[in-house]
Length: 337
Image (tube, rainbow, N blue to C red; front, side):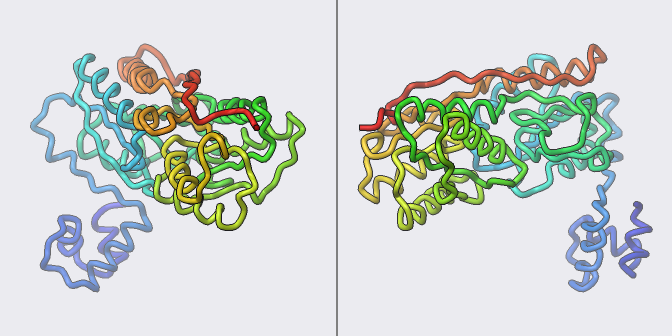
């Protein structure tokens, strides 16, 4: 779609469309709304490549980070930037909200910054070939894969842990410590994210160990944020606190839950054991230290860049890597009294 097409569909002039795209003030609100509506529906991507034509060659690699407040990404971003710079390239990063479209953002960056490739850190797990037609450069999904999409393995690259298996392992530890009333704190049960995968691992562990599933012990926070996790846990404790352990799908969510438990007079781990996944730095310094399965954050970042560079420089095609976690014992896990 061109600017002329947008003008025709919006019922305005080409110059008006141009002023809207450049965020000029000399446009009526009615015209601005019509133009932006057409752009949104068409997923139009402004072509700003001309601004960069003075460059003879691009050395830019994009990093799109989905979820601006997620502390889990901090060390991964550092590892990615270091690896890109060591290889003689320049990193261009954008952070977007957890409900934003990382593919659209990546496509815009590709054209504006003349990217050679993109690392998507965090993102949806339901890509389709049609959706990815806006991208013209190789990309790697870092920390997630495409479990719920329709892409074949040779259409994309990924570096991640095996989320369902790691969740299974975490819940199994609780079961081995004698817990049978195990709550699960998830972002969503069917949200097409790692939350759904880790929830499925929780269900599988209960089933394999012969423990009855109680849907009233599944707590959905709606996001991965510490505040939403805290609020969801408060509501749960007000309704049903009949559990001796909690599996939180992410460290930061576990920390929010621990505050809610403390405010309700429940001690960790004496009254409620907690285990999570991620290994964010702050979870090592809370009291008690969180027991968690730590992701290999440096390897996630470095390996993602290595795979992308191999594709950019013609050494290989798409590759998928699954990395192991390691258990940090912490002090939030104990046997049932």
